[in-house]
Amino acid sequence: MSAAGHLPGSEPATDVPAAVPAAQGRRRGLAGYLLLLPGGAWLALFFVVPTLTLVATSLYDPAGSLQLGYQMTWHWQNYLESISDYSPQLVRSLLYALSATVACMLLGYPLAYAIAFKAGRFKNLMLVAVIAPFFTSFLVRTLSWQYILGDNEAVVSVLRTLHVLGPDGHLLATPFAVVTGITYNFLPFMVLPLYASLEKIDGRLVEAAADLYSSPFTAFRTVTLPLSMPGLVAGTLLTFIPAAGDYINAELLGNPTTRMVGNEIQDLFAAGDYPTASSLSVTLMAAIVVLVFVYVRRAGTEELV
Amino acid sequence: MSAVTSRTAAARRAPARPGPAARVGRWLADHLLLGLGLLVLLYMCVPVFVVVLMSFNDPASRNSYSFDGFTLANWTDICGPYQLCDSLVTSLQIGLLATLVATLLGTLMAFAMVRHRFRGRGTANVVIFLPMATPEVVMGSSLLALFVNAGFSGVLGFWTIFVAHVMFCLSFVVVTVKARLTGLDPRLEQAAMDLYANEWQTFWRVSFPLVFPGILGAALLSFSLSFDDFIITNLNAGQTVTFPMFVWGAAQRGIPPQINVIGTIMFLLALLAVGFGELASRRRQGR
Image (cartoon, rainbow over all chains, first blue to last red; front, side):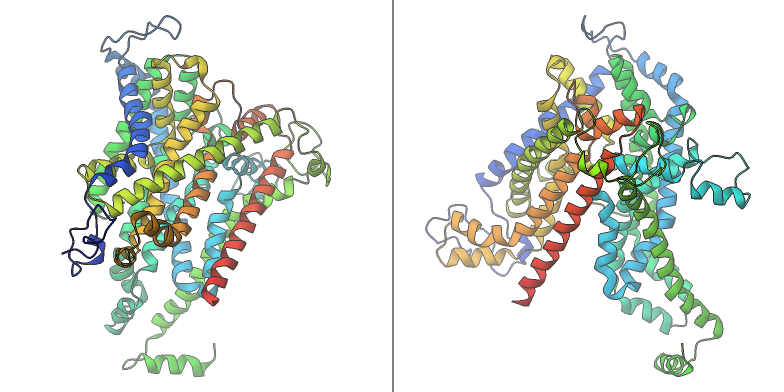
């Protein structure tokens, strides 16, 4: 007999005996569907249906236009054309996203580790400092990199003095600037999941490794790092996926030769070439899905969401 | 550190006193990592300092983005640049409305996912997860393809942006509220019902107050996602201009320093909110 089942006025009775663990206390009945309905309908109508529409649009006859209307002709040619026309941008997007993800990993791991294990009572303060830049508009922050990397500012002049850059070397409007911007923008998405999984690690495991004569490095490599893998995988995906579709950094910090696939999709839509734009968009999504799938298989983590 | 502390530390880790290499490694791990972390943190915060600095900039020319002189004029004349405040109002309206709807629908979904049994749970999970794993440009173009195919290309604007924002905020709301709700013992609700509370009373007196911090967090997240979104908005905006779109346009023409004032104000407001939140949670714990 359920705990609440015999009470008046509690119609969706729990069928779970009190002895069953708390997490299983789920009720059957219509209420679940009703709660799910509005949000689910919104997602179905404005996420699932649009995605299908995008795939359909990518197969329209490109001869049509917004004014005359499009015809569904299963025009697979669109894909061949958009891949052959925009493969440099596609490859560049994936390459920039990959570089930025690796940079986020290299920068984000020490930071997450320091917050989780070394920050002491400043832990919360450091976490706030990670999230705080989020509060200022994404575009305004990205624009501020135009200033930081500008030709007349400190960073460039120091690098010129050190001969890292030539006397007329630039940072702004280079691939480096674009990757720096992407890294900056998506770093919190790497740090936060990493921190969450590092924080859960039982410190006694690391101590045990030390007791068994492992050096700090070996302890890190064999205990801490494997235990933080779920966070690392989640962080990688949260960084790589939006980075591959981003075009704000390429536009604001790059030059015409650093254009990413997002720039092209946006411009094709603006120009009204819906079939090509859609096929390029689907291609980007497919490339990401394949890469993510391979990565998750290799990283071997099931705990993703 | 002094020899005494290192000796006691070594004694605690008996039997073997760690070799010099291990001690150097330990010291490095202790201090180098913290320093490295702080450097990365600096990298993350420098742009905010620049935004604050630039809000006091007196630019020599329209295209200059270097600090040319100090002025308070930007702060006293925020609405100076054409369309800036209009776009800000549009963004605030869309942000508030989308947050309200997304938080409401998402909270209901989270309750369904955690507290109810139904067929198709797996499908629901995937549909909730996917928008977070889709690049914005793909989501934006999908929606545009839908609107155009449905013959709405003429009415792109406030409401299409609103629809898009609710869509991509929903998943984040569900995930945030779900996390809070999962940590909540359902026996608290069962106890309320044992004490003759009906569903409605149980929800408002027990579940809702306990889940509220999660809902509040989700709402704040939604608002900042909506307020900040450019890529999806830009594809579906028609003639409407939101604040990020204004900044985008300004970036092509010459950036008015006032956008940095807005950036600074947003940052300060958010810090205030975090401060109040911290204070409130401390007071609750103190009681």
